[in-house]
Length: 307
Length: 275
Image (cartoon, rainbow over all chains, first blue to last red; front, side, top):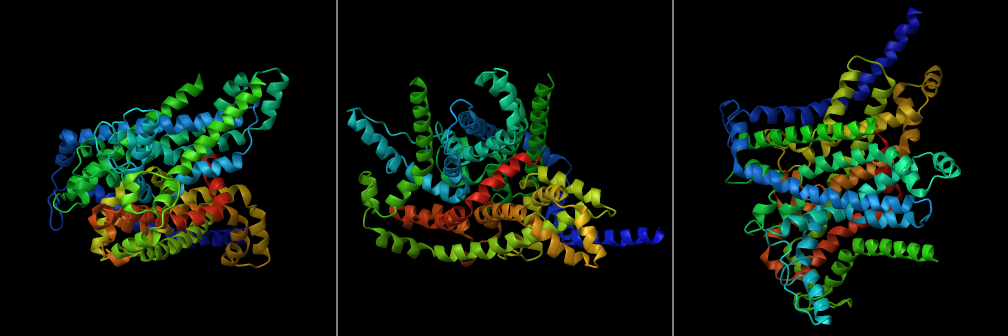
């Protein structure tokens, strides 16, 4: 008996060997940097060299800087427009493809096309759209103008990415264009994981398609909607590539699309404005915001489910 | 009849949406073959004949093939390391009872929730200290520790790999390493492939981290090289060249997508069901 036990323990010791590479790399490249950022957030480190611990001063400065709040508002505003469009469109598509009456076909082809924009690097997308949407020379406005001309109307070119009134929405729409396919695939995966018997049983009981949708489909895919909303929130609050590359720093629209990550980048990595200690505090404030909102979102969804 | 009409309208809308997904790329392809002056003067679906001229402008400015090659040098090893070590770690966590197992799994769960920006500054500081700026090591080695992938594979192993199989191998005298390579990996291969392809796309498209770490032109990965377009006036005066740059930068990942779309689609779906 004891012999058998010791043999099992010997086997189990292999577990250490199997997870060792992960643990070593994880400690060096994940845990250490996160803790290092935390430490730096309490110092006045500018670029390199010695720094003093200054307590919560950086945090107080973050919270009292008007531009941080503007950046946060920009990020939230872009994210809200983005998530409404992205999830709304994904939801409608899911309704269409899961409808028991219409039984739409072609899902395998449609979903690949809808997912296409999502696999392409945001850098390439940014240049594609900033060129297409150029105010004076972009193909987008040229096409709109020729349509107006067709009807004898006069088109006043919209400065999609250069004016503070539209730039944020433009970024949000492009972001939705990139991500609705992803959300749709996830929702669809949820629908397809529902046991077919439920639908059949409901149909036998004489339930209409709206009842089936409302009483079976909707409640069962709610966890996935929550998952999509939370992952999109975590991603959305860290938005960087698209606005950073699309909007000229000198443009008047810059102030309306500067996201928290762009604000962090300015203090963390831009020559001349580097204040590493301060940027670290920004990172932690953003993290706490993401954490809080995720928890609230989770509670809201859970709360509704209990009723 | 009304039913058929409604269904027709639905199909029409679905196709319209599909066209919206492809239109920007179509405009890109067409404009890449036209001169800057032509593009500005009006749009047409007929390709132009300035492809060669645009090509010269693009490669006068930067060597995109070098960027593509650099991205391969980063993404391929990072993906392979991620796939191998995530499987190894997931198997270790799922099948062996040892002290610290639960702690590691807890840390993995926690780090799945922690956004990447939180480590960014500390990570960069670490790399400067270790003289790893302009090196690919910090872009490749961290792939060994991918919490999300390990989590997913652990769940997969627990649900698809019977413990008795490993025990039988032990009785037959197989070593643990042998069992891992010959029994575990073939069974989890489909799941590893799904996660691997997503890891590859993530690495390939990554911009912020390589942009911070790489500043030598001949070391830049594709997205970082593409981003230098922002500062260029030389190329910006010719829209055709910009469209061509974007087109060239998109082609490799498009080929990957065409080849692996089945895996990619199932991977996104798996991501939704896992929690």
